[in-house]
Image (tube, rainbow, N blue to C red; front, side, top):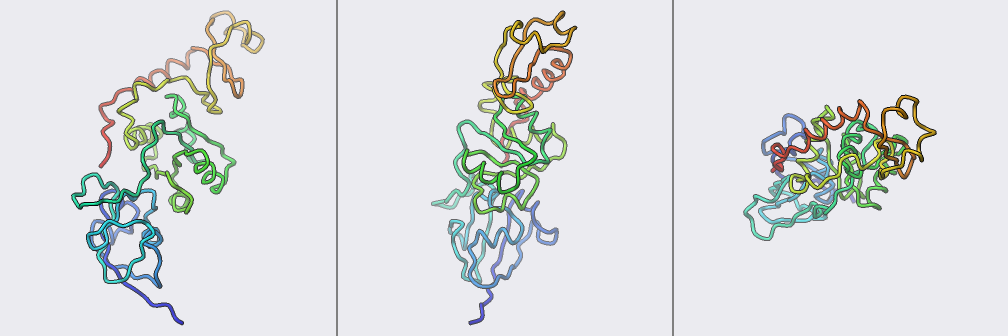
Length: 260
């Protein structure tokens, strides 16, 4: 038996329009599908990853991703349901993690260093495949950060975010704002994670690391720190001043108003 076609009217709100072809942005349009796919599959086929969607209204009723459309319906898709006045709103994004942890794809190496610099737990390995990233994110309840829209459309992805900015400084501001870190940013512990492996950094006696230090470092520095995971040694050398300036800049909370 041949599959039937159905047509519905869609309108995507706010920043979800970034994922749409230009002719469909910020306007109502009709979209035709074959058979009875879930609304989640339909939205992703249109171009919007499900991780960016917080609420879907079908003819004014809030529905889940598993809802199947019937044709001739009006569907509104929102990135944030907090300002929708409709009763009995079903929020589709998972509840925020108390202590966010991240995993980044291979294209966000500089952002990873910035996140770790602030003391945030961020897993990163260039050799990981998309499947590895998805599985690690699900198993360890990590938020997947990526600029690969296709990665976020994987059915197992629960928490994910498409990074809009290109510049790593702007990327970090974007992440801090997106995940509402203004509320607890001052409780972060900068310089507590290894920039190379994400391990915890602890203070180390000079005698313990003496044999691994450059000659001039032995002479002029006395306070040292050691990564418990990879053994990398840190001290407050010339490079530390540059990193401290980055930390100070991002500890300002004036720009960290959550997006709507």
